[in-house]
Length: 487
Image (tube, rainbow, N blue to C red; front, top):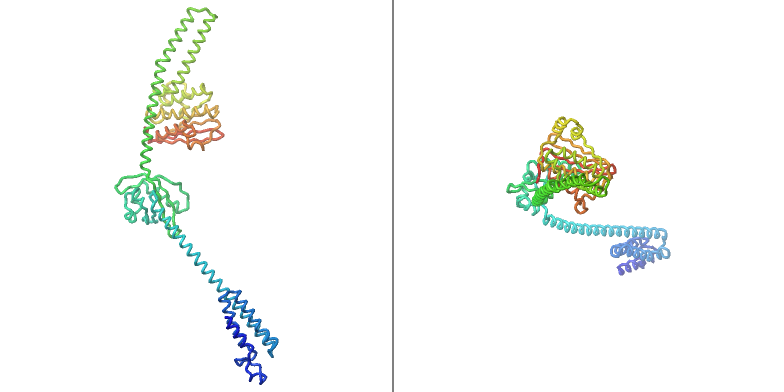
């Protein structure tokens, strides 16, 4: 480039001798004012800009301008024309530099974009392989099906959950996997997802395995894709063994509960038939001794009377303990009289006024014995086994004892409503309530009473709801008509 620039500079200042003698100012190429030589300076300028960038091109333009200006002002016979041509040449050189710089930057941006896109492509491939690996190696069964229910893809874990090989899963309809009575609910949940509504997940469903057996799974459903190509992602975990273990534990808990109640019953019977009778005999003997052998007002008589009073108080306490262990009235008269007796005992034990409502109240307030029995039969809940009645009694008893011991309540209400075989039993108090957030781990937080209430409700086939706050606590036991004792 330096040689080219030097050659152009020499040509710019040389002129043939014959032209000088003629007094003409012609260029070497036969044109006036050396215009072509000035234009030729654009070649090294463009080359420098192309090779060295904007700085190199502008440096070459500055050198070309320095080479052209002496002729403009010192030699040329047409300085105005020569200056104009020089300015035009410089302007074109600037435009060439600017255009080449723009092209260079544009090419650089494109190359940078290509590099970034390539990096993104490599990252997407890496992430895609990672997610594919997670999909393939997940312990939970995962499959995707379209709106028509055709399974698009599935992982290897589906084989263990459904019994179908992965290759066969691709040809299945999702309706084949679910029991007929599960499909309406599943379609409803998928419709809710399509409509953008929230669905509480995960939920328990039953699937039909290849061998025809049914398995319980914990299922989550998600909507994939856009509005034009939606599909559903299912993640299923087999919980059949867990359910069997839970059922076994509940059966075991039921057996323990029955054994516990039988032991309570035995101890209560022993206390009533043995200890109470002995105390009664001692009390009567003291009566005889006091009446026959002591004078009124004597210290010995007063001491014996104090002993007699203490024996009477001991019998009252033992009878209260017997009622707590196993209320005899529950075995002989049934649930409603036992609950009324429980309500009365709470007043003496904790100073808690317990009021009964609904059918209980009607039976309690009737003075005539025959009418009371008739009313009792009318409002008696559906026939249940003695074990079920005992479970209901224990739940109400625990709720009242919690109200009397811990909540500072002065009043509680027992309500019962039965309709078509189902019953709702409510125990409300006006105490201070408690923090329900701690009830999520009842055993760990020491709330064994609440844990026992919920377990008994489950054994009844029902549900237990606890509402608590500054206005008091409500314990609501719901027992469906078709419930059966799970023990």
